[in-house]
Amino acid sequence: LRADEPAHSFSLQGGRTGWLISRYDDVVELLKSSSFIKDQSKVFGAISSADAHSNEAKLFHNMMLNVDPPDHTRLRRLMQPSFNPKEMLKLAPRIEQIADSLLKDMEHMEGSFDLIDEFAFPLPIIVISELLGVPVEDRHKFRKWSNTIVSASENEHSKFAEDVKAFVEYLDYLIKERRENPQNDLITGLIHAEEEGDKLQGNELYSMIFLLIIAGHETTVNLIGNGMYALFEHPKQLELLKSDPNLTETAIEEMLRFHSPVDSSTARWADENIVLHGKTIQKGDMVIASISSANRDERKFKNPHLLDITRKPNPHMAFGYGIHFCLGAPLARLEGSIAFRKLLRAFPHITPAGSLSDLEWRSVFLLRGLKELP
Ligand code: HEM
Image (tube, rainbow, N blue to C red; front, side, top):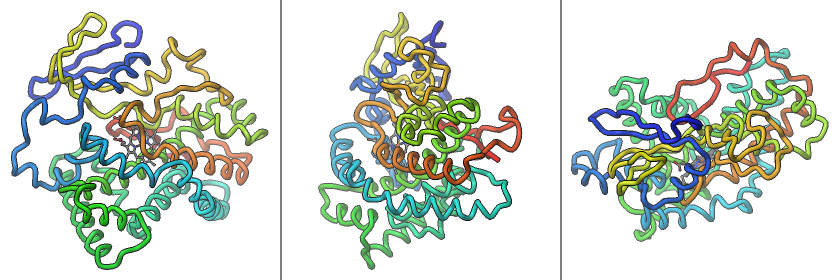
């Protein structure tokens, strides 16, 4: 596609057209352009009030990732201080403790474990649960709901609606409980912001907590899993990283580029007709940026299909670009770096249990991650 059809169109349900944009420079333009917007109602008209009060609307419609300025600017301003790199660094000792404890359990597994289930998945989930103030013991429920929601295209609508409802009911309970017993956590902070009215409005409290839980569950797991997979594919790079842990930070950036945990951007909608590579993207068309393709674009990266953990500079797009650039990037980078330093020290002889080509990838929307990595 990058070579022959950098703006590729496809049909969507309801007769609409979608576009997949695959070259690095075009992806940058798309993600920074104000001609591609998030708010569908501006393109297709307002959603009906019945829809606006549904469980799905509570979670999705006002989500920071789904809105444009000025609402996006207000939400981003509210959240940014809690996720800046300095604030995240304060979490490092606790993240190290969690990693140590998971690795200790793995040492008792007689030499064999599934890296996803035992390490890559629980580490970021415990961290985001503690940060938000979600009881860690409820994380199994979130795993199920989160999985249904990101696999929505595979599931029947009824299962999706059922899990969305369960999620909303759980958030109702959590928000009520935290209003009565405020804690030193992010959910309490968001409740205060809602009470101030001008900072968080309507369903935004629900959709913000929801977005952070989903992002915390479905992304960093793939950085750790895909990163280890990439190192197994490139044994010399694995040896290099083990011999020089100071390369961990550049290695994490290269892992993010090489098997990007978030495969594509979320959808944008054209707010006007736009001509790209001789084709016309019509007002109202849906447009998606292929992040993983941009990250392998030979026009931008030298030897893009080689993993080079010393690569510098590495202007990959794994966290997106523009106003929706990943809020959790400093947290994900910190978790990734602690995870690899600790994992390779605890298990210097780590090897895949079978052939890499037998491993299966999860079939989920926008994300790329392994089902298991034994
Ligand atoms: C946005 C990737 C981890 C919270 C994004 C976007 C990407 C991304 C590509 C932009 C999507 C778009 O423009 O359509 C990743 C990757 C991660 C990661 C690769 C891990 C390796 C996290 C974590 C959190 C988080 C741990 C929070 C706990 C968010 C939020 C947004 C976002 C809130 C929306 C920002 C906005 O709309 O302004 N992420 N993410 N992410 N991410 Fe992440």
